[in-house]
Length: 202
Image (tube, rainbow, N blue to C red; front, side, top):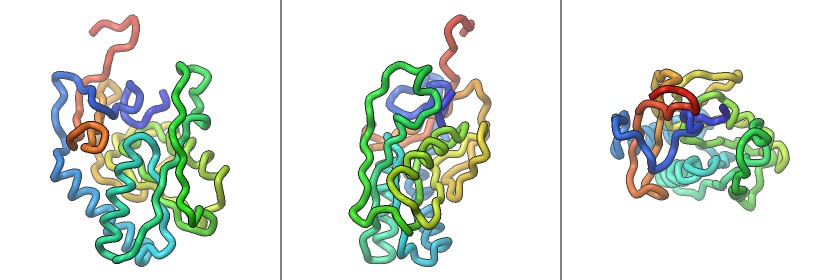
């Protein structure tokens, strides 16, 4: 219900259905991130006050990659960190106990800065809502933007990404799986059938 990837619900990680097909390979992911980095610089007029916060788990390495690309263009350090949303999820009571992730805010903090939230897949919008609540508890940014590797549609909340690597139309019977070299050993975005829910056939 909550996730931004699939019925898993997030659809990210090493597991992928045997029939899944690759919709983005490693070089295509790299090109998408390079484009997003340049778009951030263009829209923020050089990104002087930009802070990147990745949403665990795969938003964190994506934020790191974007920061390195921006640093390569601008020649200065880009503050980045992670923003754990576990305790802000609206399905917390319905799901099994979850391990807390890590919130790591750069020394500059977020007050008065333009914070770009980074995640792998945008689906219902509920992850982003939780991230905004979590961010509100650590500071008051000047503005908040959203960078997403894959937008698969099916929004349940009025959330729209500012930067998108790939718009990928999907059905609710499909799973989007993002694999990244940092946790998974390689880069790929896979599209496959969703795992059947209990009581459903095939």
